[in-house]
Length: 204
Image 1 (cartoon, rainbow, N blue to C red):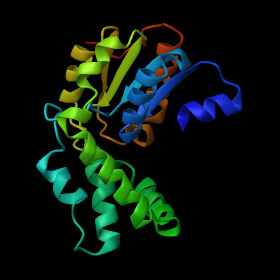
Image 2 (image 1 turned 90 degrees about the horizontal axis):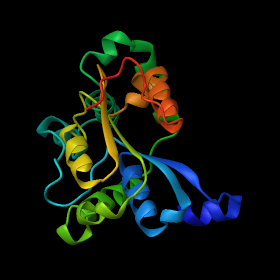
Image 3 (image 1 turned 90 degrees about the vertical axis):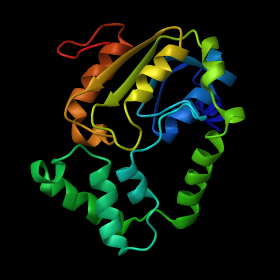
């Protein structure tokens, strides 16, 4: 679908960023359509399979909870996906986020489909791990240091599999770092796309 969209838009080659499950889409795209991808950013994701690090027990309990009050479950999902103390630092953003999700909820079928993708990619035969050595693109692996949904140890595992990858962890943020620290994230991403190392960010 992504390759078809690029074709329909007349985009021959693009920088590609995939966040979380979107990272699976990005890996699939660069492997199946390498000519379509310029620089690659894998954000808060993993390569699937049994060697990828799973969510922390705390995050897994929230993600698999189907019994508690829906609004409370939604709030817990937001907070476990952000760094500790996020609500205290940005209470209005949490309230706005909840209001947005109440107004425009994620329907059960798409959510179940997303979980099914993750479950399928947890199988060895579907993992991207052993295929990533084919990727020749400059790759940024970008994580929040307090990600409990996709633990940042996955960054090093991805870097070991990718020939031209660099890793950076953004401080004081979690899985939802694009909303927790958008200015910092944008600075790092833009400078990577320009071929520069971002200042004030520790690269491994």
